[in-house]
Length: 206
Image (tube, rainbow, N blue to C red; front, side, top):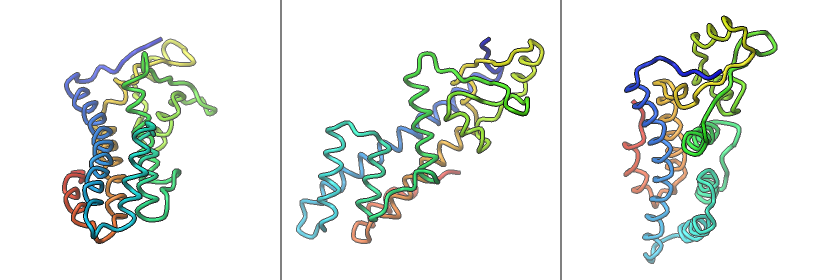
């Protein structure tokens, strides 16, 4: 069966907008940083890494490389080290991108609640929602557990958008974007520190 949470429509719209804008902001940042570095490469004082950054990010754009790969490339060029895929900030950022893709591209975007090995109901699909459940971002709505218990259902299929559009998820999305952007800003060499300064205040979560 399918159900959706009886919560404020307006609050869910605001949360959903925050999640999507957080993902869009991350993509806009890396593209804009690429543009700024490209402009800098025309100066005689531009270091070698700037030209490399421009060339590789340009190739990535032409080949439609994923936003996650663009961040990995940027981090490696700037610092000589890639992001650890299994740890923040990249892990949260990758989950945010997956959530954004599900919301935008999935038809219909659904999530499945199912009994786990202990008999408790927990998110089972899609995997990104399971990961968010583990970090207490996508907690199970008790009303769903009540529905499943009263109907003796083994699984409940719900509207993903409705259940991910929460204040907690919105705050997590903003933090995920701020984390990945600030990690790139931290990696920017001192000679380009002005660019990092320009973005610091824009990527802070209240």
